[in-house]
Amino acid sequence: MRHALKAILTPFFFLLILASCATGPSREQALVSRAVDAMGGANALAGLKTVWAKGSTKQWEPEQSDVPGGEMRFANEAAFEVNADRSARASRTDYVKNFAYPAPRTFTYSEIVMPQAGYVIGVDSNGRNGQSMKANPPAHSMSGLRLASTQRESRRANVTSFVLDMRNNPASVAPAADVVAEGRSWPAVSFQGFIVAFDPQTGLPARIRTLDYDNVWGDVNYDTVLSQWRDFGGVKVPMVRKSELNGRVVSETTITDLRYNGPVDVARLQIPAAILATAAKPATGDVPYQWVIRRQYIGTYMDSDHVSYDTLGSPGLRLQDVAPGVSQLQGGTHNSLLVEMRDHLVVFDAPVTDAQSVWVVNAAKAKYPGKPIRYVVLTHHHMDHTGGMRGFLAEGATLVVGQGTAAHYRRVLASPTMRNPDLKARDFSRVQTVEVADKYVMSDGKREAVAILMDSPHAKGTVLGYVPDAKLGWVTDIWSPGVPLPAKPNPGLVAVVNAVKKANIQPERFAGGHGATAEYAGLARLAGQ
Ligand SMILES: [Zn+2]
Image (tube, rainbow, N blue to C red; front, top):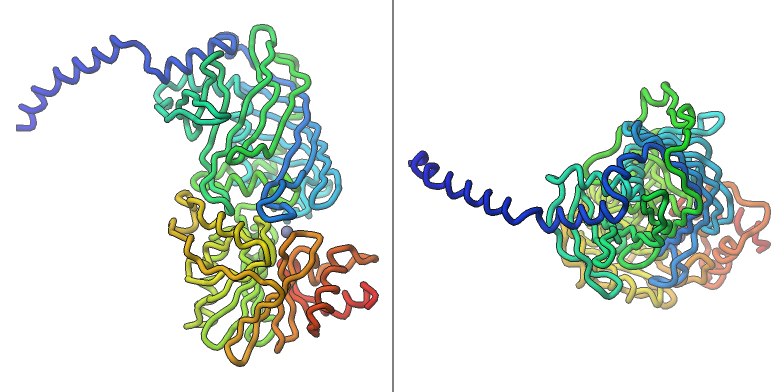
């Protein structure tokens, strides 16, 4: 029977194949071929063996704003020089990065990227990992997460080889829906995780998109937008590349000098053998690209193969008792506080990712059995302290946030999260939200956990936490308890002292979203109280 069916079907399929051949190249192949020709032709593109370029980049972080949903923070402006050897698939980029946020500082460092490993020479972050701290002078191999992210971004930045790759791998080029951007429709193809949109007039690639996951806004479009094409000996190159996150420009790179096929000092593109031997391979699977890329924008990225903690410097997350029935999540780059009530728990801050929150939920179930998390208090809206809110809210908790910020969180919670690697997508639009106008007291009749609205130079609608019976406060980003205090009080520290006075509370200690715990008296003394 099966043979008989095959006998009938085979000539039919043969005819189909003939018919498709007769219609010529597919729409997708035609778009790719036209782009290759518009950029100078396959032979010219294949002839580009080495690249040297200089330029500058400006970056902005949307989710570190002063006002929730407000203007993006300008993060840094960098000068860079890149040398690449395409046949070896090796490159070196030297950076001088001048940061404006979270504090003015300059990082001068180099990145060497090979197919199997990445290497960073110099200091590129306030959050250095164990390997960087031990090395003298500072250097470290890239985590697999960073290597995969860097390789992905460099693939679409090297648009001449990217387009050639599409042409040489026709089986990987598939149909895609038109990309709608800038008020018009662009024909597009999909290719190895990218969606490539073409300019219908010039045929040039205009926009290279990935479908990313953002811990705040959920499913997002992340686009490289190519413009200002210039001719280099018959090859067309875009001199300006902007990165758009859901249509907002978060990065703008301008190439000022470019040379192909000049001499390249290959010794400068080598990763030392001892580093290569232990360096991470590029990560596969769910790479939190937006976290890895944008923490670098503000120079706070912890280069680690776990987003929550330094795998080379920390044994991992743990719940640390800081008062009777009060635990601080420690061991990671960002902390939470758990307060045990009669029949439930209150949690302050939901940092990093839902994977971290799910870890906390499970640890809390083991430590405080039968007590579900009923309230999630967020000190402020920044992505690194709210990116795990869904993991707690999925337990049925109420969201407690500062005055004037609830509308922002409702927009965030209404956004789609089909790509969330840590949590099944669900409807968060009916989450109960409470705005703290002055003080919001969560009480079980005996113990209280208090959320106090405060003025902060760090973010509008900031909340301070307080557990009266433990005389323990909770503060994030404006004071990191346990980290040595500066010689002079800064505006953030002064704001904490003013808030304590205004709320008329008597904390003995504070725990924090960074750091650990510290006596309050030390801060009060510093602020001259
Ligand atoms: Zn912050």
